[in-house]
Image (cartoon, rainbow, N blue to C red; front, top):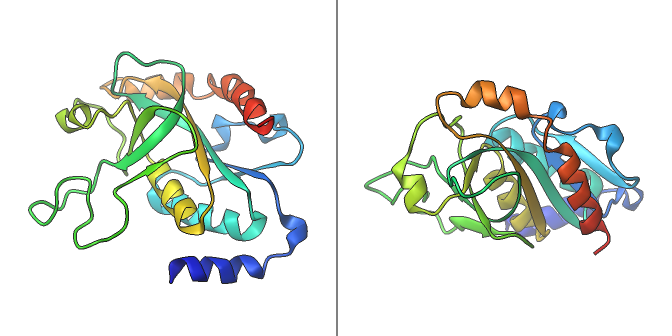
Length: 203
C-alpha cells in the first residue's frame, strides 16, 4: 500500500522537476549548497528521524531523484575508523521495546530492522539522541558510527524503491567532549564529500 501511495504521489509531480541526484543533509553548516555540481539538489532536513523522514518524502515528491545521497557528520564508536566513511548498512539504535522485541526492533512490525546502501562497508546506528558515553550494545552490533537521521532517510527511500548512498564524516568520539568536538569539526568533511560525489556522478 505504501509503495502504491508513493507511485501515485510521484505521478503528480511535473517531470521537469526531476533530478538524477538529491542530497539530504541535516544542517546547512555541514554542506554549502553553492559548492555542489550543476544538476544536484540539496535539501536540509534538520536534526532527528522525524525531520529526516518528512524531508525525504518531500524531496522524492518534488524532485523524483534517481538516487538519494546523504551526507552528514557522525560520532565514532569503532576507534579503527576515521575521516569520511561510505556507509553500507544502517540500523536503529534507540528503539527500546524489550521484552516485546530486542533492542533495535519495532514490536509487531514487518518492516526491515536495517537497510543496505548501494555502496560502502561501514555500519551506522541512528537514534534521536546525541551519544556522549559508551554503549556496549553499539559495540556488540559492530556499529562503526552513530548519527540521528540516516535510518529514516533509508527507510523512506526503500519504500519508494529509490537507491541510496551515505557518506559520513567523523567529527567526534561520541564521548563527553562530543558536543564541542562536533562544533569544531562540522565543516571539515565537506571537501572530502564533494570528491566522492563527483565519483558517484561519473558512475
